[in-house]
Amino acid sequence: AEEVGGGDKEVVREYFNNSGFQRWKKIYGDTDEVNRVQRDIRLGHAKTVENTLSMLKDEGSLQGITVCDAGCGTGSLSIPLAKEGAVVFASDISAAMVAEAEKQAKEQLVTSEDGSGPVMPKFVVKDLESLDGKYDTVVCLDVLIHYPQSKADGMIAHLASLANKRLILSFAPKTFYYDLLKRVGELFPGPSKATRAYLHSEADVERALQKVGWTIRKRGLTTTQFYFARLIEAVPM
Ligand code: SAM
Image (cartoon, rainbow, N blue to C red):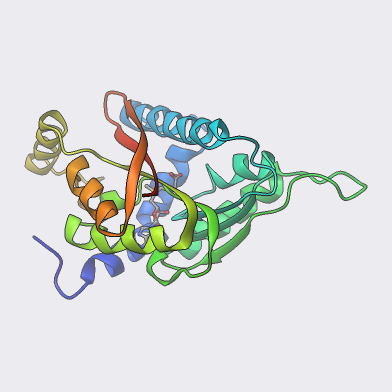
């Protein structure tokens, strides 16, 4: 079931503007309306965000650093980045996601009366393939899962071309155990079955980076019961 004529992107956009928006807004939120699996995914994702923030801060203060958060979702990373002083450009293919991220940023990022405080991220509805400009850092968390490796190669190359210093990516690693879990999901498709999930082998991602002159400098891994994410930080060779 590979994509036909680039159909994946339209399916993904449609999903994240509708049922996917409802589902992920809940998972990325903090209310109790989540089931056990969703709660586990929430926890895993929060760890990925936390690990990303520490990878970013490892290299020094984020004050004034420009960061592009490609596929920003509800702003789980963009908002804490802004709190750290980063100048954030955040975009997502889904208008519903961008509206939610903007709403949350307005609630969570308070400027004091003298006008000092975090810079509000700039939120834009745009697929990552049409992003342009240059940023110190480009981050793209949990987006590649929606695309096969054939598409991911081009996405990775494009994201690298936008970054001056580093690119941070997370993806669901192709391991036997996770493959198995996914197969079980396909054998028993429930009503809440989302879009299909694509796993990526670390070697494939590394090869895609190397083709455009980038190399992996740091690696992290988040695993909970239902959430698996490989986190990598790449830099120009
Ligand atoms: N990065 C966010 C985070 O970690 O909190 C959101 C992750 S969510 C699983 C995936 C997001 O990627 C969705 O908000 C979806 O709309 C967005 N997305 C999927 N394909 C995209 C594309 N081609 N360009 C930009 N955003 C995309």
